[in-house]
Image (cartoon, rainbow, N blue to C red; front, side, top):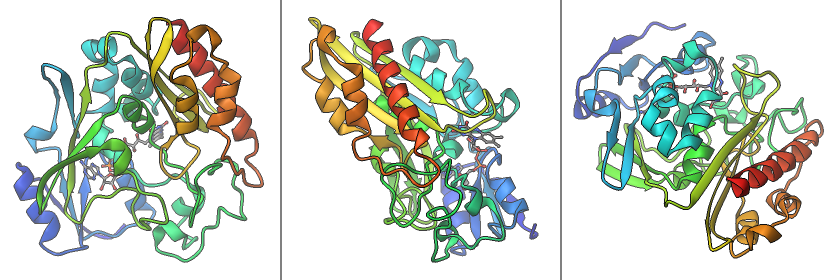
Amino acid sequence: MNPFEFVEPESLEEAVSLLTKEPGRAEVIAGGTDLLSELKDGLRRPERLVSLMGVEELGGVRWERDRVWLGASLTLGSLAEDERLSGEYPILAQAARSIATTQIRSVATLGGNLCQRPRCWYYRHPGFPCYKKGGVHCYGVNGYNRNLAILGHGASVMVHPSDMAPALIAMDARLESFGPRGRRTMALEDFFAGPNEQQMQEHVLERGEIVTGVFVSKPPSDARSVFLKAQDRTGEDFALASVAASASVSDGAVTRARMILGGVAPVPYRSQKAEEYLVGQAVKEVESSKAAELALCHARPLRHNGFKVILTKNLVRHAIETILKQ
Ligand SMILES: Cc1cc2nc3c(=O)[nH]c(=O)nc-3n(C[C@H](O)[C@H](O)[C@H](O)COP(=O)(O)OP(=O)(O)OC[C@H]3O[C@@H](n4cnc5c(N)ncnc54)[C@H](O)[C@@H]3O)c2cc1C
């Protein structure tokens, strides 16, 4: 690991100034559960780490009249255990509880979860100059690609590893950030960038820009949702595939639907075909297997991951049946 300076600003302005002073030399660190392993493996060599953990305004949960704000430094453990959040936004607690272990969740933050780097073994192995590290080649295309993308791949076949992302997108969350050009918010769905748009990061943050939090509107009273995840081992494992589904039902018919797939594409994958099929359908007439076929209709599995298509279809089916029964 190369030597680095560790700085702990107390305000957002100070953090942004420390990040932009010498462009390219500083990195943000929050809980460090992802970044530190990258540093240990020599994948990144920043000269300065700017910790966000002393910036008070990034922490906690703020309840507003018709929405909640989740701070970027909120730990996944606090998110999973917050009783009011679990009651009003169960899908978020379900996703948070599915992540890693109690120990990791007690330091891993929401902002870090959304900004974490790919988990592909070619990316993580110091010996492969893979595309997402600035190389020219994605080794996953012809290599061992069991855990990699089945949908939406481009210059890389990585999958986005965040479980919080699909759950938040299913709730139409908005991401808030602060950077050299001030504060902005965007639909969380628009925050993620595939490998053809961004090579060295998986989001649209500009240099020196920091995620400050996420807004989630109060769900309507007729809303229901669920997060389901398939993994090789229960606990401590990333998703082979996940599904975050939410819907509103009024007078026996679906009036709104969100179907977001995780672990299958370089960005959280929104299946508009499945959503379009569901909206307007009488609940009694919904064929969950038809929605599942539509959700995966653009799937292009690689040599070793055809099983993920079947797995994801089953998750979609199960998710739809679960929310329509709620
Ligand atoms: C064993 C293990 C199992 C795991 N399993 C899962 C899983 O099943 N599902 C899942 O979703 N995740 C999983 N993770 C990933 C884990 O959720 C992330 O490592 C964690 O959420 C990152 O948060 P952090 O605060 O530690 O981020 P850090 O490691 O500090 O940072 C991660 C990245 O985000 C950037 N960053 C952090 N905060 C901000 C911010 N506010 N603004 C801009 N950039 C920022 C950093 O520069 C860095 O690039 C697992 C991790 C481990 C180690």
